[in-house]
Image (cartoon, rainbow, N blue to C red; front, side, top):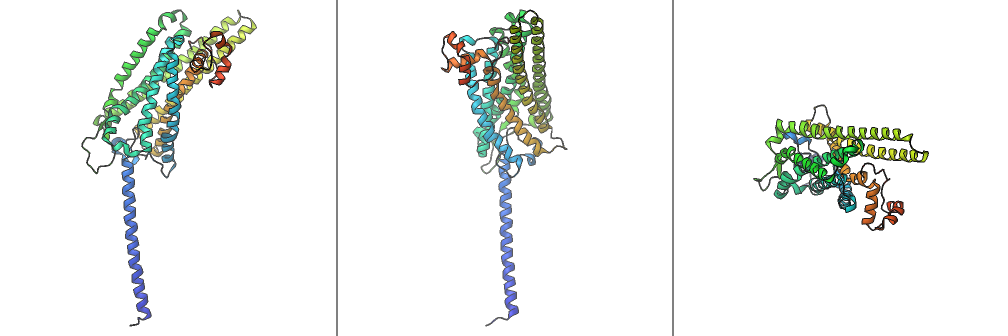
Amino acid sequence: MALSADETVTRRSSSELADDDVHSSAMNALTSTLATLLSSSQNGQAGAGHVSRGGQDDDVIMMAPGKNLADRLHFAMFAFVGPIVCVFGLAGNVLSVVTWRRPGMRSSTGQYLIGQAVADFWVLVCFIFNEFLRAWDPAVDTSLVYGVYFSYIGYPVFFLAITCSLWFTVGVTVDRYIMVCWFAKAQRLSNERQANFGLMLIAVNSFIVNIPHFVSFSPVMDRAENETGPAFRETDFQKGSSGQFYEFWIHCIILTVVPWVTVFSLNIMIIWKLTRSNKKMAAKKTAAAAQKSKQSENQITRLLLTVTFTYLFFNGLHCVVQCFYMQRPPWANMNHVSTAYSCSKTGIVIYASTNFLLYCLSGRRFRQELATMLGCASMDTGQLSGHTDHSSSKCSTLTSTTTSTGY
């Protein structure tokens, strides 16, 4: 039977409405699914320094390429920039340890630099396992094995290595200060035995003050099969006021600011002492000797300022940003703070990787010994001295500096 025009329009409209209902239901289901997946992804990618404090899961930044600048920068720092720097840093720290252990390089300064290289090596190793691995495979932290590792090894050892590295920097600065400013007492106070004692004292005290980091996280043993999220969680201590007090006042302020001020002050006194000594000797020297002394003064000044301000910049930046990240002031944009935290943490990796260049390759003796060890120069002393510049260029070293600081 033929349908009238009105009936045809009515049936067509009913059909279109039904199709719209189907499409609307499908879109709602798709939106709900995406929201669920996004929530699960965020819960499964909470990082070591990015585990929310006080249950503020909405502030967790995903460790994967996101849609905004903060997510992309976070992923780039932990997945690309940091690991590339780590590769060069690990190689440099190994070369530093091997070179400073050679018979011709044994000294109190060398002992401190060996300790610092070892500490920096572990900083880089922990960064690779704590950040890089999880940036590329966020599901790894859902493993119970990784939960145990992160709670009892990865997280506490990372901070222990950083503390040792910072205070070994103080140790080598004090050693340098004694050799320059207390020259008469240098033989008694600046020797390998005293250096080894200083290293042990710093290491033991660093472990003691970092004991709270060993109880900051605990593995999740009673996980359900369908449970998502990391296989570790903050302990009651870490989430409570005691943990916040420790992280801010003890670790951030005392363990970071005190060495920061100490290194800065001692290097200023070293520069002042060298400048004063050269002025006193200027009248007793010929013009050529005075010019050579001036060049030596400028070299050590540049070296000390470079080392000092590299240390001050990277560690100072990390301290400030970490304080903001932990305190979470209500007026701060946590998206920006998280972005800055990623950059500052990568800065710690850069600092741990460049110490090899700043402290070691800028020294003439170290450069010559390294060239000999790598086969770039002969063991013969005369030949080695005659080819210092060629060896330095071939091994891609930095500018030389005076040996008056024990380098």
